[in-house]
Length: 114
Image (tube, rainbow, N blue to C red; front, side, top):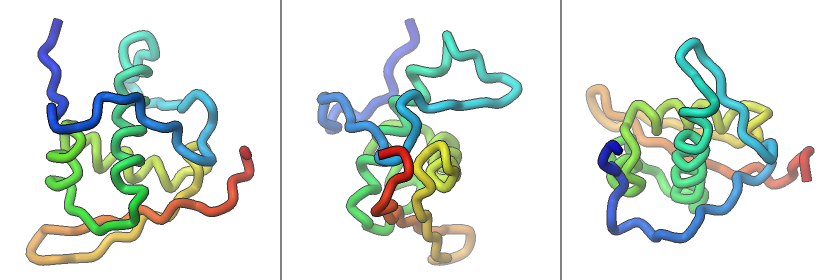
């Protein structure tokens, strides 16, 4: 069994589902295998969403540190949150310095799936 990369400082309770998203999050891609990836990707999405739902600006590194999820996964999930099937939330991005950006999630107030 692979070691967990999750930050021990993170609360151990089950994250809340993503508002407005499909009941079962639908991921895809050429390397995606539902039996292997669905639970892991759903957990990542919920951790990242629940952290970012406070509307604070954070870098990918800060989000990664807080959730224990890789920066590449954080970036992918932020893109997912813009999609209809993930709730069509707003992701804002600002340039900080060099190649550093900060991101902000604005939770969509009304959900078509509610």
